[in-house]
Amino acid sequence: MEDLIHKTARLIADSRHVVALTGAGISVESGIPPFRGPGGLWEKFDPMEVGHIQSFMRDPEKVWRLLISEMRDVLMAAKPNPAHLGLARLEEMGILKTVITQNVDGLHQTAGSRDVVEFHGNFAWLRCLDCGGRVRTVEVDLSQMPPRCDCGGIFRPECVFFGEMIPPLDLDRAQIAASSCDVMLVVGCSAVVQPAAYMPVIARQSGAVVIEINPEPTPLTGRTSAFLIQGKAGPTVEKIVAGVTRIIADKRR
Ligand code: APR
Ligand code: ZN
Image (cartoon, rainbow, N blue to C red; front, side, top):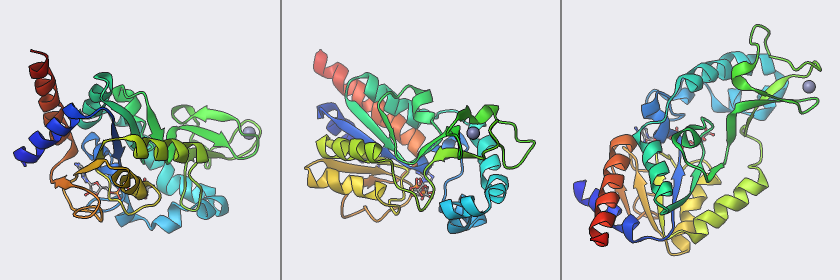
């Protein structure tokens, strides 16, 4: 594994355009449970039941009670971990250009990343179904369920539910990023939900080296990705960034 970490650091140090694709796994060490796998949210709920836009429209109170209020507490308490911070550092060094994330926790921005494509929206804001008015999720009054706007309309999170389209602008930006990178880091992403899982395929087809960081193999492993660094996001990204920093300092001497 140390070999692969070193190899990755070298590829990144020699790269002119790194892009990262991140999934729920990058935020696990920040205390946010993933969707799939051990301890995942979908062990408790059926995604099509609570995560689908039609369920929300049919019974917003239920989805608010089961999913959204719990997510709010978990997300509000979460802080970026060394993986988020490491990616932000690579951007600051001018090497990493864009983070495409499936996460709605906003932790990349909190860590300092600036060019972030939030494929599945963000949980920080709610939008009124009737008038479109917005309110910060932290500030909404949860004593009535579902929470309502002053106009009487129901609030929904600005996330992409199952059954909804990825905002076309975000999809465009992600595809451009994926096709213009020479190295793509895929961190904590199970690569089973489309179209996010297709971004590494675009990167590979455009000639990039795709590198996975994940404790488990995924459908990309052995096909789309050049290799998998089988480990946790935080310590792995931290070591890679330390390696990149060393290599660049050596080059300058
Ligand atoms: N470090 C890195 N990866 C981890 C860690 C960790 N500490 N812990 C778990 N993982 C990996 C798992 O092995 C798995 O491959 O993170 C991945 C989490 O998978 P999912 O929960 O499926 O997350 P994600 O790929 O982001 O899901 C995609 O599915 O339900 C929808 O909209 C939701 O955005 C989400 C999408
Ligand atoms: Zn309203």
